[in-house]
Image (cartoon, rainbow, N blue to C red; front, side, top):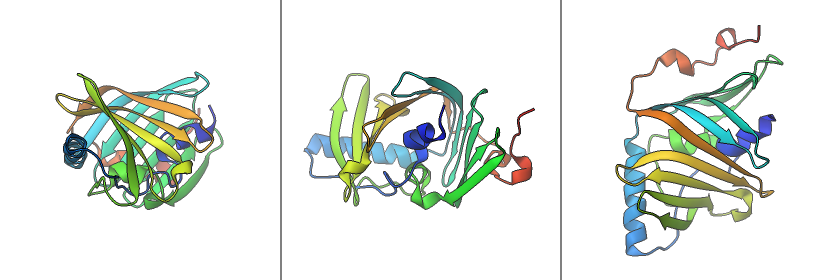
Length: 204
């Protein structure tokens, strides 16, 4: 499992640093309003995740979201990777190499879901909206750089719940992340979102 796999799937670069949508039908606009309201209403998520790479490789782990600003993505062994957003910075930790890197949260995809106010308008375009009896899917891309990639959010329709997302990067590589056993609105330990080096896990 390469480090870039999850960066492409969930928190990399500038694909979704902000949000916006193009002209759509009245039903589409109603659905987008509902999606934005749902995302803004999220306080916390605790879930297992399954990540499926373009080449079929599968990884699993634990996902935590505490809005605004905080997120933790921890892979099961043998994948040694951990991501922590503490409200200001996004930290990547490689426990095998005992190396960390930090970037401003606002420059990453994680900013989209962790920000205090999510708006589906402005510098992100909604390029497609699909509905089934069970779900709604919305495709998003950066308005000023459509070639950078796309993000597809998949939400259960009734009741609305975020269930998965797929990222296709600029090279056309697709990575899907599915949330399993998800619990919403649960209390989370603040220590989960502390990225002090002394508290980061190490391989034994």
